[in-house]
Image 1 (cartoon, one colour):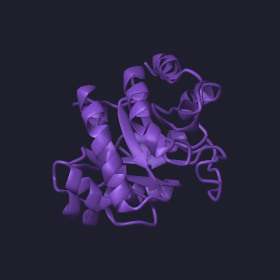
Image 2 (cartoon, rainbow, N blue to C red):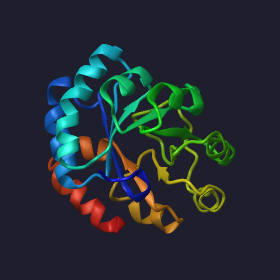
Image 3 (cartoon, rainbow, N blue to C red):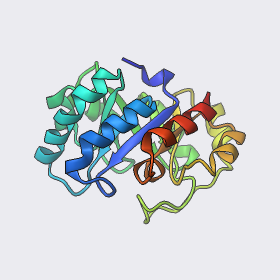
Length: 207
């Protein structure tokens, strides 16, 4: 199983873009393309529905040695034994998440500023999401933070930092150029005509 420390390319299956019926197919495409870690994010589904989808994804992700991360639902992560869980800035504390999911499950946290990133490290997160860098349809209510703090957050935070929010192939060079080492890609993968090809092409540029 890949470790979160070694991961560079983070994919998210967002049920705002993917129907439940297509989750397994998309999981296979993203894993075969080469994502290093994969999250399921389903804001409008019940915990029971999320658990059902996660159990369908796990055989695929484990066959490719890709850690599966459950967004928000701590009890689902504990129940299915996922490799990771992710909490939002306004959601559960890292300590609570760790108490629910246990020591073998890594915990990530969303951060939207330098101060939040430093605080998440102090809180004991295993990695952080940092963004949104650009306006994104996934989270239209969030104000983009831009690229200006990427270099500084890498100086001040020693955890794996995954830059997120509007990341796509056209923007990758300027994101990496500011010092980013890891990125999260959502709609650019999920809406691609050739998902595997899109993942492969972007991952080559992260090497």
